[in-house]
Length: 296
Length: 318
Figure 1 (cartoon, rainbow over the protein chains, first blue to last red):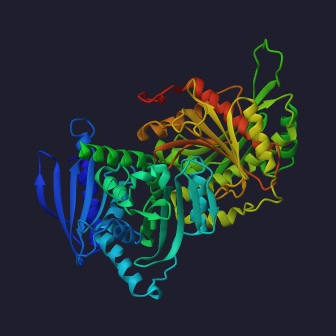
Figure 2 (figure 1 turned 60 degrees about the vertical axis):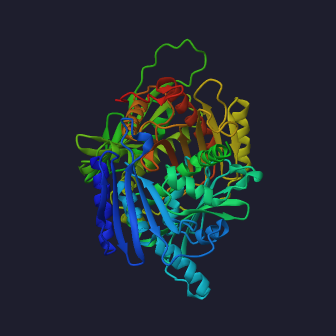
Figure 3 (figure 1 turned 60 degrees about the horizontal axis):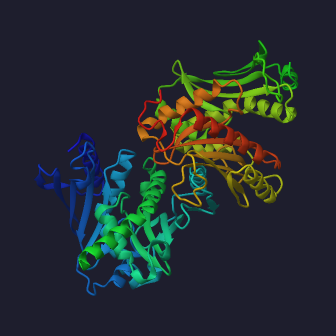
């Protein structure tokens, strides 16, 4: 593994300490440049798998991916794709896969703002599962019990985002919100919210696209398929989840207040959305090829 | 002496704080220093019939106090929000530079003179605020409050000016679209490429002029941007910003250099930004700024762009 990878893992360790958690090496596979770590979060064990990507194995590029896999505690029944969709509406930094009873996220180890990515990843390790399940339970129990903490993202922050990304397309600046259409169909919306069921205040990031722009109606692709492929080989980190809102697929992500201090966090969020937006056709193509291979 | 120089010199002559220098003035606002100077230009004998008579280049340059230890990367980050010129570093000092070609037969002499006077008067305070806010993001709100640039247009801007401007560029065979607050033009960078709207991967530069993008510190105004269809490797972008910013100032007959090439997004995009702070709508300004951007992009295409690979993809820009 490269120095950059070790530095990234060290930074994850340091941030996890602020959650009173530790990253413990459990297995190492030298030939395949892979390491498995365990983290004992209060709501159950979480596995962190660091490995070199298969596409970089025989190249001079050393690309590494970190995968986070948390088993749901306790297990939930009714593992249908519809249920996935319902659960993933409460996603903050990871997605749920009820069939496997897991909460997942992944990211490539980046060269730009690695410390910020490591901080978001650490938060996903520490609370990705808990925030998602906590959101579901909290909402089911009583809608009045929503947390109310003012978002740290102010109008001034949105004005800066608006200015710094003016070259991409024509954005729309609103009261503590900013929207931009990244390509013909994909719309990114950042909004300061104060009532996330788990975190309270933070930044809600929604990337939405009409279903028809991604796949034909007869293909009947679900948001779970997008989650599976983006977790498997996505270039954009999957800190969040694809879900469905009417006739649109929506990637939902929530950045809690305390991550606002991380250098370049909003630049990264927009960059991730751009990457995610660009790789959507690839995810769908993979599913089509997979179905074709299964038929043959 | 051109009419513009005459207007500028007469306006500044009355200011006791300024020290006269050769064809210009020095403003020492301890510990920072700004100069405005008209550098003579001897035009070669031109065979072409139409000329506005380039007579001088006006340089407006501020040197900020204190040792600057930032590298090209930091300068490139600073330049994404620069205004009235671009940031540079020389002899471990941070500076800001704008250059403006002066023509004897400039049809908008008063407008140009006012722009030069504003750049001279505002470069220190605004440049310092931009730099300090980049060093220390928490100082942004205080700097913004201190500068007190208008944050509302003094009068409504007629959206029809954007539709009309876009039509003008379509008449010149550019792909162009307009909205209520902005209009865009695409400059083809490879033969056969026309518009990203038709072909998402089209190799065109996206140019935009907007009145709906306020500067975080300089308030409302006209914001012009250039986005390239693909960017150089992230590690090369800071050097490209420096190369392009420096090269622009060395051109003898070129559009105003009051903006900058800077580093944007997750340090992986290069973009040109020109912000002209004003709250007074002027129907002619959006088209004028777009003309500047188009000329700039044509120059980049001619001098630096390689079809299919961009800004010397595998080359060291320096």
